[in-house]
Image (cartoon, rainbow, N blue to C red):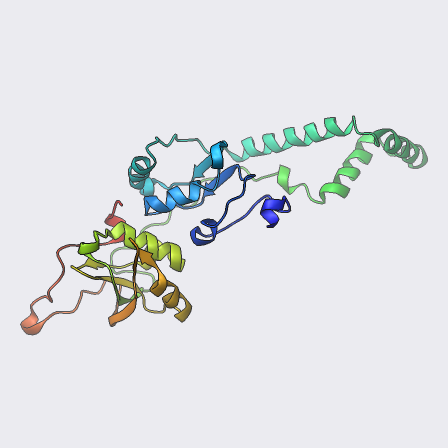
Length: 280
């Protein structure tokens, strides 16, 4: 209601919360991360440009995620134009220009003459230059000049990727069963997208995904909260409830899956793919 009435100009929302938004005044949608499910992206950008109005959708993409763009372009039937991010200097210059525009607009305000007389009286009484008085008035309204003084861009330090199995705590996974599989024509991308959106999970939270005939096995963090498990249980893919439940004991990331009798590998599904290898 606050967004619709104009009390809010900026709203940060999850995919689930955003789906219920129908606000005419939304002009921009900024996707902080790229969804693995193109359908989720379509729902996101549908919050702007509604009912024939214009709107813009911005998508922040890391180099590793560029492979997912093709699926989104196919789903939207529109190419995504790449934009160059502005530098800190560009942002500073833009903000200073807007500040100058605000001063110019205030010169024509009806109350300008009254405040001008007050300022002239102050400078005669205190012998303070007009520029200093103007700066003091800006401080009174803006408090801090930080919005005009972003630090210069600098390259972040490069972090060496640790060798496989070396360095950093191991992630502990548990295997969960969900009620969709090959017969529902489900894909790993759909599974990751649905669980990530509804459960607030990141790509790093997913391990192996095993799609069987009528169900799938998904490795998720062993420390999932009860609230998250309940949310994922109610999640639907292709109209089918997932009915998520724990299936197997947990394992550490990097550890090999369990083996069957006589040291033979345990039977697996037709294909096992990690989310990082999936292009929805």
